[in-house]
Image 1 (cartoon, rainbow, N blue to C red):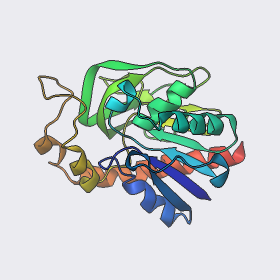
Image 2: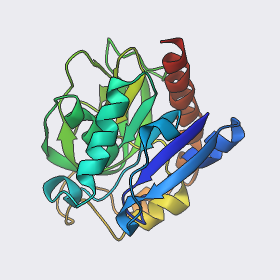
Image 3: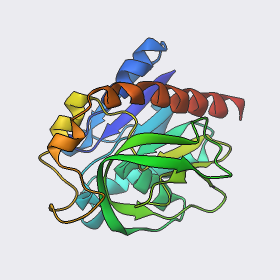
Length: 229
């Protein structure tokens, strides 16, 4: 398969995703929308991944958002796999009619997710994931939830039998890609049980390694569900 990835900022790279795509024999193209590259045409790819980006883009949509939204809508209406992470998940949720708004608490660093009873995701009942958000989204109609953390009850969703997936949490980050985010926190530091500082985030490097098999399970299930549709 040839997969297009939409990148929304220099600090919000694909990280481990491109390594996974290469290891599975898929080709890919990364489009740097923030750097003036145009959104691709839907017919030029077999699947689309919409990456994370600064949450300010939700409040102040950039000039290229209309083209990206049109592309996302085309993928939603197609039979092609569509995956969003962070900001990308917000864009997909909005395209499906859900609401995006500030959550009760910002959430950064490592937090535990508990799967929902009706979660369709092939993941452990509980696992730690990396968080980097202030905004949350509601569950789109006809979607099934991933599960949630104490600060964000909805950490993702699957729609159309898993062909379309949105993840608020991050399974793709590496120690290096997380370090790039440190200069772009989603909210100013403050007293909050769900905000971790740099020392806490990088205290246990193996946590980043433990994300790899979780990402593998999600991506494998995503592409398999889409091909079976």
